[in-house]
Image 1 (cartoon, helix red, strand yellow):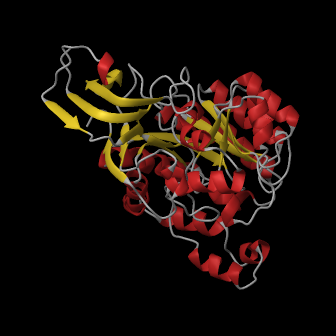
Image 2: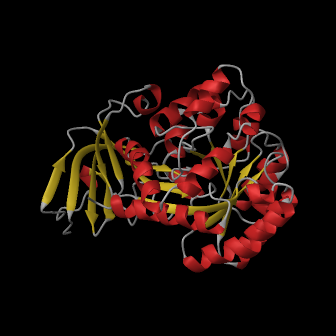
Image 3: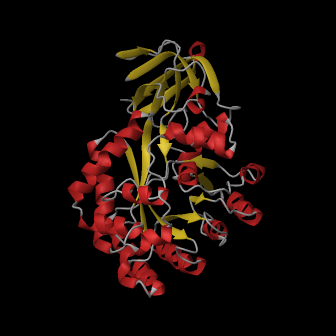
Length: 402
């Protein structure tokens, strides 16, 4: 079998769902042709005629699927470091917001930024993810809250994939917060999102999905339903920020619409978990936001386990509540704060994250036919990827076989 590239003498954490645990294989081989895996298994089972112009000796290193960050707000203007200082000094979120801070500040900075500026400021954040083995990243809009800036954000997100060797999934999050121009008219703003923004975004082909923030400080379940109906009418998948600060039954609503994912979920109840399981909707857990805003209520991990809801992990990189660009730290936080296992953490940043993006058949595991996206690690055991803090053992990152 003629291939483009072969990696030999590796230990594989395949994360294949038909294998127990991490799907570990000792003395493994991966072979790639045209950017896809054509063999992944034990060296003793490799085809005898397996050959390629480049053969890499991994010298016993571990290979996992490339990491997937399935929930980020990577493209935005400005930063909110000053607000962080104010909060440390005792200022409340409400006080900061009244003084023009909070999401309004990021919206103003994003509106004032050019597309080129949004790309240049996002690239260092993207590079930090890439440096820790990320090969696919989802990027949301939501800091424009009016059509032209939302489109600008989405174009900038897509452009990042032209500047770096990485797959970009883009999500329209117009229903992120109430636009300043609609301060006293939330229903009017939802109509603008539903009738004005979503059709334009779909026509431009700039989004893979539509998201919304269903919360007391965001939008109601009824308003979110209208957003989902518009997304469906325009052929776009849906996902939802749900049950982060209270239980508005957003997860059940997301499941009703066959959402790819419901994200945060600290206040998820059993009915919501049951609905997610029935719909095959992934739960995306965001320990960085939990940590940064000092939440005390953890997501109901045991409930999600009981109903076998796929549990993905992501950085939630954003300027206000999770200025985090380390997927390795995310896994450590998930283990220490949420009591997830090593296998759950690694699956959460690979296989289940792919599920949360609707890409489970293309990426997320080391299996024949999937994209050859790899992370090669200088570790003795995969648990080190979850155990260590502030240490990056990445030896090499492979995207689409390169």
